[in-house]
Amino acid sequence: MWIVALTLYLSEYLFKKKCPFNSTKSRISAILDKVHSLLADNPGYSLYTCGHSLGGALCTLFGFYAAAHEQTHRLLKEPVRIVSIASPYVGNVKFLLAFQSLERSGKLQHLRIANAEDVVTLMPVVGPRIGIVSPMLAMTTGVANVYKHCGLKLQMKRKEYENGKIYRFSYPQDQSTDESYANEITMLMEDGKNFVLSLKKVVKNEAKIVAGYHSCEEYERRLNIIKNDIGSKTLSALYKDKNIVGLVLDAGYKPVILTTTTQEHFTRISGSETIKKSILGRLK
Image (cartoon, rainbow, N blue to C red; front, side, top):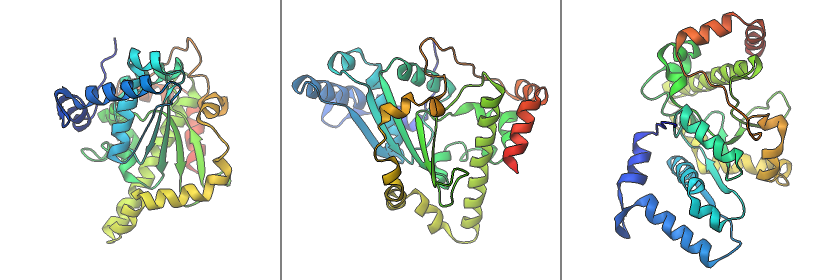
């Protein structure tokens, strides 16, 4: 049994607050009832849940629970699909594992769109603690273990990646191999670097620039730049691309996640030349 931790506001809003149009039920129960009614009245319809910023986090959480509901899949012949934009973190590593279990069974798909410079996508890790700035501190204090993003990520940035494009797709890997473990650490370092650069702009009274990275207009601008590249790609096809998702979503796959702090992480890093070389190589 998984114990899933969710950010407090999200769980309060969806599960504890009464729905305005149904005072006897929580918001998520009332919405699910309405969705199930619509699906029953319209056979063959799909279910998409979309949102930006906090709305992106809420749509992720709603999509997860909709996909886990038996009634949803009695009415749907395809996965529940989430499209979140600029979403902060939603849950912990156990939430990620539960999320991937639904993806693995074909009940859920999630496209998470994030600008590399958008600090909101690093929240709430950078809010209460500074751990994201230092991956080693994050491991020591446990910050790196608290929140995990889920879903297939489309990340865009102002400057080109090593592939010559301003975007790249990725998917959360487990820590079963040294390479995937090293990749997790270096991506955490990249996030920390982006946060520091944005923080410098705030200090220089350039907060409007930082806020702009989070705006719908900036997301739309970047998506328009890459639309010819990605316009023909379907979410289902991306989920089948082993170059993106690896083996994590294979039937029967048993994920390996380190949920402890300092000692286990440091021991693994110091004991593997592959991890050390990979990290140093990506830091150049």
